[in-house]
Length: 292
Image 1: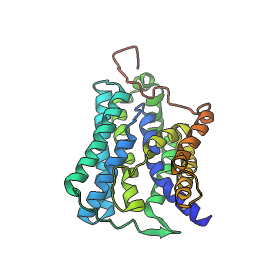
Image 2: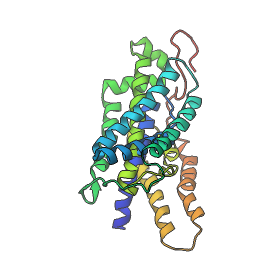
Image 3: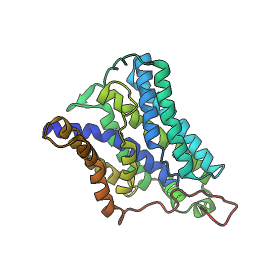
Image 4: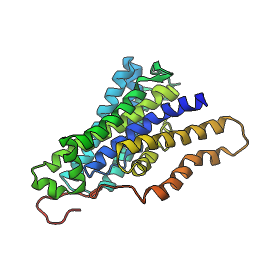
C-alpha cells in the first residue's frame, strides 16, 4: 500500500500540470486540445536538453518555452485571426507530436538512446516537481478566487463582452493564458522521461493528454477539484501498470483500458455538475454583437 501511494503521488504530477494548464487556458475561453502533442514535445525537448546540457532543470525550462510557443500560436490564431479553436488545436497536436519525433531522430537517430539522470528525491521518496505541482494547484486556486487578476481572467472566459466593457483587455488575457497554459502542459510531458523512463519514446505519453482534458471537466474547471481528481486518475494509471506486471492472467489490452473506462464512468456523473466556462472554445470579436 505504501508503494502504491508513493507511485500514485508521483503519477499525479503530469496530470496536474497538463490539467491545470488546460484549466488556465479554458478560464480565458481558449480550449486547447493539443495536450497529447504538447506533452510529446515537452518530453522530447526535456529529454534532449537534459541529455546534451546535463541538467533536468534546464530541460524543464526549455520544454516550457517550447510549449509556450505552441500555445502562443494557438492563442494568436484564434484571437487575432478568429480561427476555429478545435481545428487549430488538432493541427497543433499533430505538429507538436511530429516535431517531437523529428527532433529525437535528428539528435539520437536510430542509436540506443542513453538514459538521463532522474530527478532526485527530496522528501518521502518524492522529487521537487511533486511539491511544485501541488503548490501550483494551491496557488491557482488562491489566485483565481482571491485576487482581482484572477477575477478578471474568469470574467473573460465567462462573458468577454462584459469584461471588455469594464476595460479588461480580452485579447491580451487570452493570449497570455493560452501561452502559459500550454507551457504547463509541456512541463507535464517533460516530467515523464525525467522520472518514469529515463529516455524518450514516441509512445511515452500513452494517452495522458486526453485524460487531462477529461480531468479538467471532471474537476469542474476549478484547481482544487482538479487536484483531487488527479489523485483518482493517477491511481487508475498506477493500478493498470501494476496489474500488467503482476501476472494475474488478465489480457493486458483489457488492463490498459481501465483508466479510460473509469474515466468514462466518472465523467457520466461529473458532467452533470461541472461548471464549464460559458465561452469556452468560442472566439470574441469586440466589433460584433455576436460572440462565438
